[in-house]
Image 1: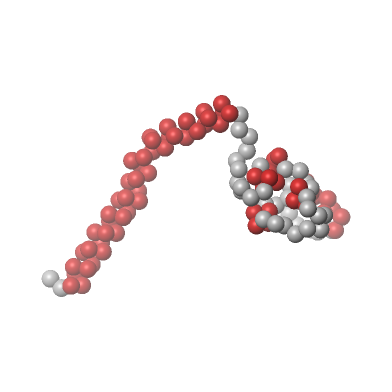
Image 2 (image 1 turned 90 degrees about the vertical axis):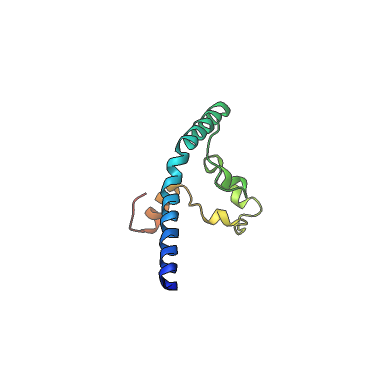
Length: 110
């Protein structure tokens, strides 16, 4: 048998094994994941948690529904954003409405 044939067989078997693991593992752990999700849901209900904590850097990016509009500028009104996560989160939609109306910006209605 040629070396290229051995390599082809080995590569094919390795690929088939990876595909089996890729699609078989979720089926294998589905029940355990479902039980863990139910447990987390009970904890959230018991502790009465509010929002998902997306970022851990600043208080105004931790819980977006709890943040006020001025906490990002707490050091100085013209201060730049300290944390990178602040640039990933858009301002609330109701702030865009006034901007589009005042500046005549056409496009998607918010």
